[in-house]
Length: 206
Image 1 (spheres, rainbow, N blue to C red):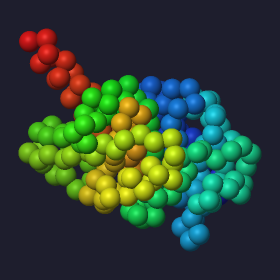
Image 2 (cartoon, rainbow, N blue to C red; image 1 turned 90 degrees about the horizontal axis):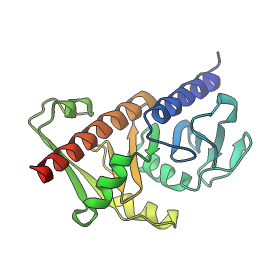
Image 3 (tube, rainbow, N blue to C red; image 1 turned 180 degrees about the vertical axis):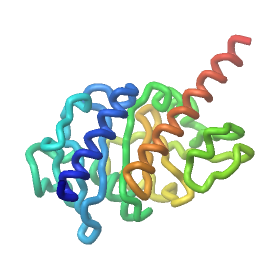
């Protein structure tokens, strides 16, 4: 299997896994992995495709200007944001999910502009964290249908010490130095968001 085909298989499997967790229902979410860095070429699912039915051959390769250079279909409107994250952090993969927990919590905490996650054992699944006795603030930025403006908004929050950020009422962007690491960051963050939401619900009912 050539490298391009292997990457297609890996990304398709990742999308399928995330869809199976109900983190990218229907056509929701967008996902990219770097094929080439200079100039940037990304392997992505095309816009409008049902994420539960993506086949490797349906993936497209796009450049940093959202031009499809291999495959059929349109590039995701949010390609510009993926490129911004990849350029700033020199990461290899960006995964954007639309889970219920991330959507609800990012809206609820929007005015605070962050969600603090602290004291949970699962924090150790995030790169650079070796103890549960720590905390991490996941930034929340306001949603904007103008992706160029949104890309500029997230720029100050992009840090190699963070595994992702939230767009208010919209969902999670997570990244990693590999596709596997990006997926792990999604899974860990989504777990912690679920724990936080359940804790808030229990506190409100006590």
